[in-house]
Length: 376
Image 1 (tube, one colour):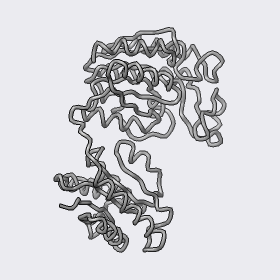
Image 2: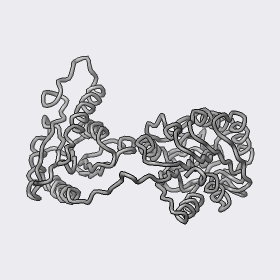
Image 3: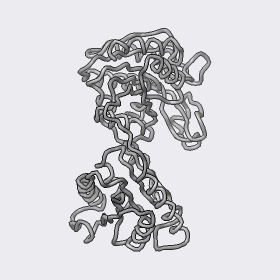
Image 4: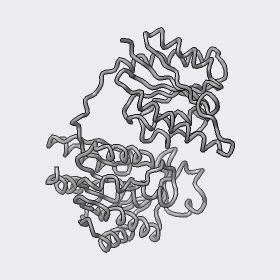
């Protein structure tokens, strides 16, 4: 039986293009079913009182529900083509599918897609040109995409039924600790799954945790809390620090001492006046104020007190990130003490252990592993 592909498109505006992609897929021996995601008569009739954003959400949710019911074991890939509106509807619909199910979106990408795909495995294929009629470039993109989809349809499935690893959150600013922890856990036969705590990786961490993918969590890098509370790009993740409340956890304030902002030229003057450094060409790290640290520590404490399993908070008093160290750009022992004092004073469902080492010191990694091992 040929592998089946579900192809999502707004047939009101992309019928010709969807037809061409379907033909290219069929040359690979694939069975293609087109699913119309138009906001108008091709999909759901839009109520006049409904805003476009509401219509996109409603149609995306409905199509997503329909897609979930179509996954009968014969569907190998879900693909979509769209401009601005179509891509938004398709990404919304794809959220209803299992996060690891193969999905491809061919799009003009007229918006920042990071939040939409932060907790969903979607391969993005940029068209570079608008999807407005067939032309040499669009044909090239669709021919390439058809080959990609054909390859995905033949990919071997990975058996994850009993695969439960230890989640680990990390950033470049805490990579020394992350590397040491992974190495130490590997030595005792434990697998780790690392999530980039940059304001988007936490959304995937949340979805995996809620799906039961972990047996324990090392939340080494709580930096995303500063983005959620104060400033910085991020995906919606309201349960970032509560989703693993049923699992044993070691929690450290990695990256909790700085704000993650964009390239230096884009940083507003009120933040450039604080101690900061250029982390890369794309990112600038700005030190928290004492008031912000109090608020962040209080918010973290509140979420951790909702835990139903053992939580060990480890506070590395030698520094919370790679530039919070002697001579570092954002070194601040007073901020660390504030964090420790707030977390200690408000502890209810968790314990607090202060260590004298820097977060990236080998001793800190060893303490994390030693603390968590009895719960594995």
